[in-house]
Length: 237
Image 1 (cartoon, helix red, strand yellow):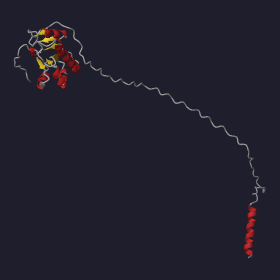
Image 2 (spheres, helix red, strand yellow; image 1 turned 45 degrees about the horizontal axis):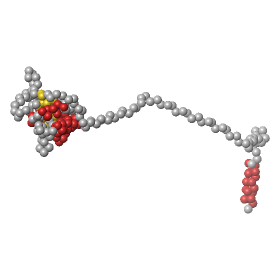
Image 3 (cartoon, rainbow, N blue to C red; image 1 turned 120 degrees about the vertical axis):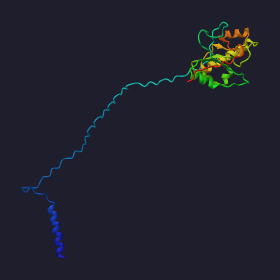
Image 4 (cartoon, rainbow, N blue to C red; image 1 turned 90 degrees about the horizontal axis):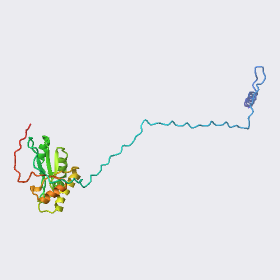
């Protein structure tokens, strides 16, 4: 019983001894300096941030949008040709070895006609010029074929009336309508202006000739009588 009490007392003694100040080399205790605590806290000013200006980028070139061209619609009425005297074209210079190839593209509204593509192919293949006399009603039902013919600069396009009537005996108003209506459609489709007129069936009277000349067309009279088939010899490859 006495031994535990002695151990307990010894432990207390050692604890008290360790709490004393540690001696210096000369045996005096070490003085501990305690810094005074200031009750006033001074805020240090924060640095001012200055915004850096971004550099200005100078473009090397300016993109200018290219305006899209707008197509000007073609007028529905063909330009008026100057009036002319009655003038027939029967043939060219007979001193030169040339022949004029002409073709009529016409129909009556009640009798639709067709298009001979073989003639176009042969003329185009051999680079042969020709004149096509266009009927207005035919162009109305053959728009693609009309544009095809107009695309060849060696093809001349003439006027062959609208409905291919017999013009003698018709009034001035009706004859003018046959001419003008065909002129306008040809111009609307192709931008071309016919300057030659072929008489339907080659028939005419004085009034017919006067009206045609008034509208500025020259008369191409290659059908004053029934056509005769002439064999055409062409050099082949």
